[in-house]
Image (cartoon, rainbow, N blue to C red; front, side, top):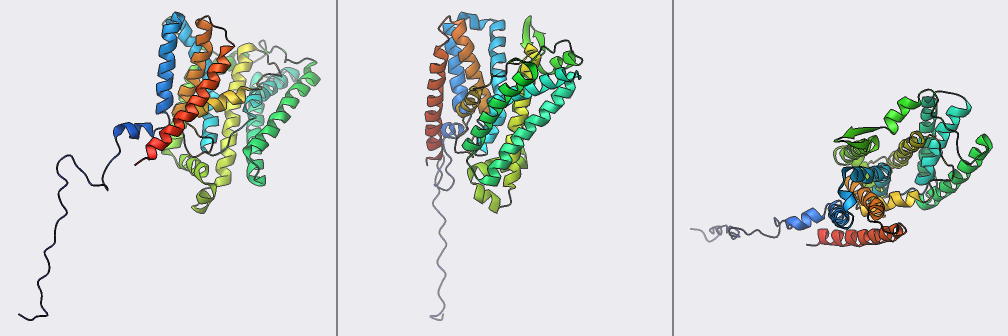
Amino acid sequence: MSTAQRAAPAATAPPDPGPGRSDGRTRQRPLALRLLARPEVGVFLGAVAVLVFFLIAAPAVRQGGSMATILYQSSTIGIMALPVALLMIGGEFDLSAGVAVITSALTASMLSYQLTLNVWAGVIVALAVSLGVGAFNGWMLVRTGLPSFLVTLGMFLILQGVNLAVTKLVTGNVATDDISDMDGFDQARAVFASSFEVGGVQVKITIVWWLVFAALATWVLLRTRYGNWVFAVGGNRQSARAVGVPVTFTKVTLFMLVGLGAWFVGMHQLFSFNTVQSGEGVGQELIYIAAAVIGGCLLTGGYGSAIGPVFGAFMFGMVNQGIVFAGWNPDWFKAFLGVMLLGAVLINLWVRRAATRR
């Protein structure tokens, strides 16, 4: 045999890791860490803990009527917390969301009453106004590059002043006139503010709308291209634009979704109480943002879910009503709110670190 010819070395197979073992390339994180990576897991556990606490501390909570009240309180927060959460996942937040609810209700009420129109005409115009406010916020944001804090703070002040000034100018009072005897009122109330009976307990329709909107928002985030765009623009706007994500469209429509939520909640308030106080809504935007943050959304964007804010809103409703049912001083609600918010931020920080730890 020629010296140029040499036998090829035998190929050696990688060592068998053995049963129950895996190499570093295929190793999976423990199930607990994978569950903690979900943004809604922490707030779910917190909601369960709060529920159990008040079931023990306030026996009245165990009654069906009390739970219906808690869920109703949660739904009025949760309906707005959903679009606010989507906006936060997209990297922005809206300080005008609270007063925008009142703007919508005032528009529908005054237009219908002063022009003696069917209330549905006011409802439709109010929808256009709410979407327009959201579109303006989004357009101003992408056009100027200003932070959403400044843009929406300016809109907050504008709407707050317009709500009070226009209401006084048109009605001569700080509240709108009663529209309960106008055409279309009963049909509109059936959509936005009716109730139905379940097991002898009156349940508000807003609870159903809240859950439907949550399911729809979850589907949009997890199963549609638009949901991918929301996460992309919230994570890194420039990178998202570089791969073809329509950043301007996504940002503007997210603000318009907040306007849509403000319109719906505004219509609920109008058809629940027949009249609207023009100075209301101030401070509610912080409740909506806090519910989204407690639900696992980050202020930096790119992370969160639509289910988390559902549990966040439920915690708000439970604490708010649970304190009353327990017979405690309701002034403690703000203290509970602050504790829940700080606790949620710390838990979310720990969860993110634990989920990315190798």
